[in-house]
Image (tube, rainbow, N blue to C red):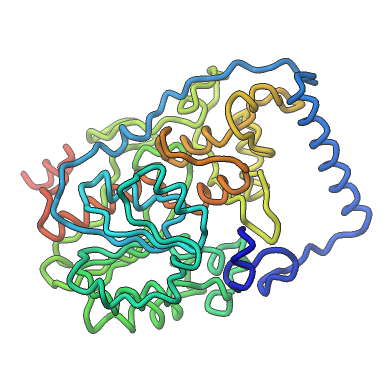
Length: 408
């Protein structure tokens, strides 16, 4: 995180952060972690000097182009305003679905460089200028059709201790305030699926539904990224609201376009992680576990593992998820001791559904922070299309199964 953000409680990092809870481990365990870290750093340094402990692996060519999961649609005449833009997952999805980009807001200064490099014509407010807690949204009233955003998920995720409203990083009330002030025709709020559990039932009712029910009709839906061709298990909850009753009645949660099982009903096949990355066939493949943000916890990390279960899945895939490399060349040189394929930033982009030309850059932990915190772009695209259909600005999305239902 940038130094200019240290005074922001919801972006604070390190052991002095108000939400920090330290590990209860012994001095012996702490020293073992320290020695492991030192050994890994030394091995990486040797690899970068060309002194590989294990022979280099060939650099694969990905078989999945995420752009094919979200074909560019012509303009639908709708405009979208983005909050908590981060790596641009929802921004990409809405852009590819034919929306006009109004502006993006994010507290992280690095977001401006990323999004402006990717889309020079976009209007981006970042750092202090992107602090949503300080913005008056009323000037956007009548000028924006859809407000969308994925507020920080840590208050509702296991990695963030699930403190909900008691967590200073809870920014859902700020998105609600933006909707109330800007009064768009529709809004989309995305977060981790944990927000849809019974633990946060009262929070959802009091923080989202109650403040907006006088103007918006809201649906809560849960989507899985793999249902839209993303080679990763990533379930998310979305709240979609419409000011117009007819639009709300027309809205339908996006239907899956892909399947991980047999391709029936015209659904396409979601690639496994190895196939998507262009890795050799080892007789086993499957979806990647949910990619963890590099900013999970009080310290930055270059690991994308979020649980013991996910670590086992990565091991079955013969993919090394710890110490993600800056690029594929570096990953090829720094082979894991067990010979597994080491992930790079570019590989994590593929697994998250980001197009190859999206300009994430090192340091690795910052790139992984943006990637892991983002909405998977193809999922954002599916939601954006469904919202446009409900607003009467796009034709209904047809699948063979949908056609059969209408015929019957």
